[in-house]
Length: 473
Ligand code: URP
Ligand code: ZN
Ligand code: ZN
View 1 (spheres, rainbow, N blue to C red):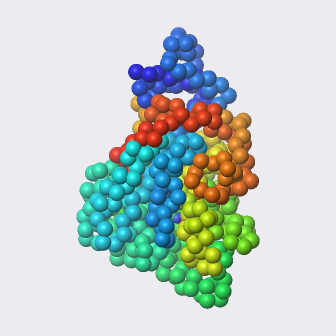
View 2 (cartoon, helix red, strand yellow):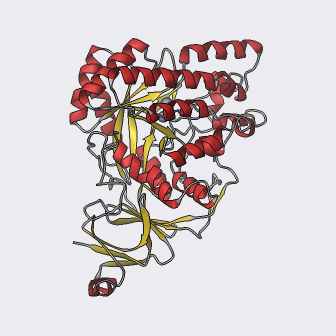
C-alpha cells in the first residue's frame, strides 16, 4: 500500500487552520497528526514512499466544482472541453471533483441521458466526477425516472425558468418536479431567470439594431432574475423541496435567498467567480464583438450598481453557500462568432474550471473572505451540498486523499490563453494575476500535479455515486 506523508503545512478547514501532518495510504487519508507529537512523524518522513514538505504552505481539501458542462450541447454547438481536457484543466487548478450535468430534452428518457453522460466520461477523466440531471422536458416519464436516478447516485435535478423552447419549464412542470424532489429528498436546482420576459426584451433590442454582446446583458435585467428567484422560492416553500439557485449574479436575487434562509427555508445560493470579478460595463461592453467572450446566463452585472461587492458580502454571511464555475467554454472562433450581428446567437457560457481556486484565494488576499471560508465555499460545502461528505471536501481520516498544497506566497498569471489548459482560444481573465499558487495536487493519493508538471492519467477519475444533500437546515 503506497504511503505519502505531507508534513510541515497548515491544514485549512472551514472551522480553522492548524499546523498538522497528513498521512495517506492507499488513496485515503489515514491520519492527521500533531507535528512532533509522536515518534511516528519523524519515522514517516523517512519511511513513507513519498514525503512532501509543505512548510509555509496550506494543505487543503481538493476543490469540488459543483457546476460544470463538459461537451454540453448548446445553441447548435458543444462546449469545447471534453471530459478529458476539462478534468485535466480542473486538476491544474486544484479541483479534484466536478459535478457535471447530464442533459435531457423533451421526449428523451432521463435514464438514457445519464447513460450517455457515463459513456462520455468513463475512462476519460483525470479526477473524480458526479452528475446532476438537467430536466429540459418534465413529463410523467421523466418525473418517474427521478427516483431511479437518485438510487444511482444522481441526487440533484436542474430546471430552467429561462430558454423557452429549449430547456424551459412552465410553473406547472416546476411544481410537479418540486413535489417529486420533496418526496425523494432530492435537491432541486434552478436556473432562475424569467425567460418569457427576456425573450421579449431580446426581440425588442434586436429590432432597435442593438445587436452587440452588451445587449445580452441589458435584456436579461436583474428584475427578471429577482422575480424568477422569488417565484422558485415560493414554489419550493409550498412543496417542501430543497432549492439550490445556480449561478446567481444579481444582488437582488441574493436578497431573496437571504430572506428565505432567514425564515429557515432550505434555499441555497451558488455564485461563480465571473460574477465576483467581471462586469457588464467592462467585459460585456468591450469594443466590437469582444464582449461575446463573456456572454453567459445569468449575465455579468453592472459594477456601478454594486452587485460584485454585495456578492462577496453574501459569501461572508453564508447566503452564498458555494462557488462553482458553471464551466461552459465556447471558443471565439467557430463558436461565439456565430453571434456576430445578433447577440442572441452567441452560445452562452464561460470557461474557468482551471481558475476557481486561485480566483477565490485572491479574495482571501484582498481581504474579502477568510482562508477558512475559501475552503468552505470551494470544497467542503459543495461536498456536503451534493452528498459526497466526508469522502470529499475535508482533510480528515477516512476521506479520499484529494489534497492540494497551496502556496499563499506564490504567484500565478491566470490570464494567458497560451498557458491555460482548457480547450479554449481565449482567457476570460486576461491580464489577471493571482497572489497564490497551486503547487501540488493529489487525487485519491496519486500526485497528479507537481510544481508545474502534469502527472495524472486519463481514466484515473471515477464516478462518484452521491447521496442526498447533507447541507439541509
Ligand atoms: O451561460 C451559461 N450559464 N451556460 C451554461 C448553461 C447554464 O445555464 O448553466
Ligand atoms: Zn443555468
Ligand atoms: Zn450551468
